[in-house]
Image (cartoon, rainbow, N blue to C red; front, side, top):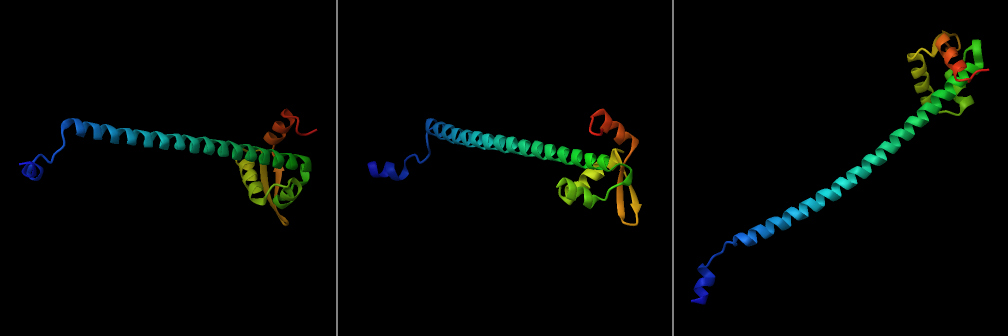
Length: 134
């Protein structure tokens, strides 16, 4: 009779066993998700730090380019000259010049030697207010 029960007996699990398995799987998923969320939080913190660092570098580059344009005065300056004198890469110099012309701190004039950049009245007022220019 024991052999018959083994062959034809209940093959399903009891409700208690099913609940225990569900609880175990739910706990495993919860732990895995919490580890994933903590790693996501770490990635977000690193990304925020990188973004703020890039933003600070961008501000420094814009300030350096603005100071160089203000220092040259009425003669105007070429972007390559700004890059050489400030040590800022040509791509970052171009980005800073685009920002300055877009916000009307500088203006570009096409000359025979290339595009020259000059301070506008707004740029001069800003430099004087920040005491950049003596």
